[in-house]
Length: 464
Image (cartoon, rainbow, N blue to C red; front, side, top):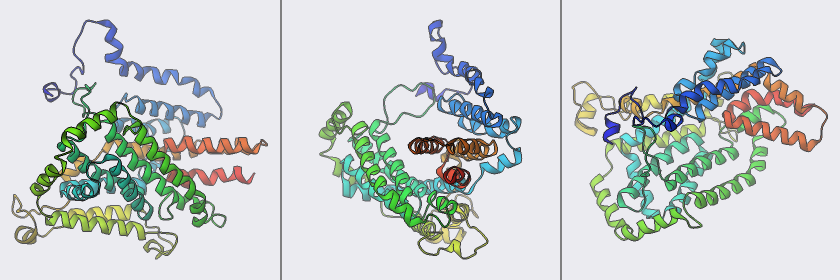
């Protein structure tokens, strides 16, 4: 940690050495930064030209992202720089494609999680969860699956993941303090100053929440991409059809996910993870309830910030649920000509988070802590906390994922794939091509963007 605290940008991340065999270990990122564009160069020789240029830019960008050759925020703007140069689309259209409603939804959900942490609402909810699951991490996983599925199905998967990951982090922190689980690994970090690596059980809990929210969204009538699919097949496919088609795969997927994560990350079939959890629980599990009770007492009763945050979280989920549920009219259906997207509900509630409480006298004398400077109001969501905790680089990379779908459309890639799939071939082969196409692009981009931009073009292949 002493080296991490003294590290400055530009310093050598590893200790200086005269051993030339360590050159690649120390400088492989700089070397790959030059090799990746060169090795991917033959892609540019293919046809159609614009589609191959798009594939070249996309492969290079995602290799830079996966191999962590550059910062994510820098990689995210690859399409802004290279798509106009490659003749794929105008820069104004590309910049507009970055910022969609769904991107602002992610901003809103991140800010909601930060508000829960700053008001200590997540800690209060974490102690409620511990009351039901105790120190049993497998029961904790099943509890999270149920809660995450309900919110993702009824409101929104992104909001469900943000809410429950924040609560899970509070519970895992209590487990770590009680000694029944190690939250961070003791593995030596490769880059000086980087965060500690989470242990396998912690990774398993986070993956459980992400996969459960995704699978719940696949069968929900309230969220995308189901709404986009219904709009693309208007008159041919209803939301009830999608729910009936997806219900069995979703249930099986959740069961397989739980079992898979328990085997790989929670030590269901034995291994070093199970031995470590068993040893920690044998040593510290007896005093777990007493230590948790002591920390809960130290936290104190629910304060006004936590109460207001809890009320606003409930209001947020209700607003998300009633926006456009498809099975009955929502508040977005009031105006048939104006679409009120995710950005309205997200950014509107963010403004509410920052505005409450906004009256100085109310804050000082009735509810909140006394402001440091007269005339300022300590709101539920302060910008300093937002600026510090928001993963800006990851969200910018999500914008690049939206732009990936847009650039693929502008380059003619979707039309080329639709033409190839509509050629006379066996039905099974065409089905496999469509399945591989959808799977590949949902790895690179959100399904909502694919359903809105790519699916209408792919319908031509189905009709042919």
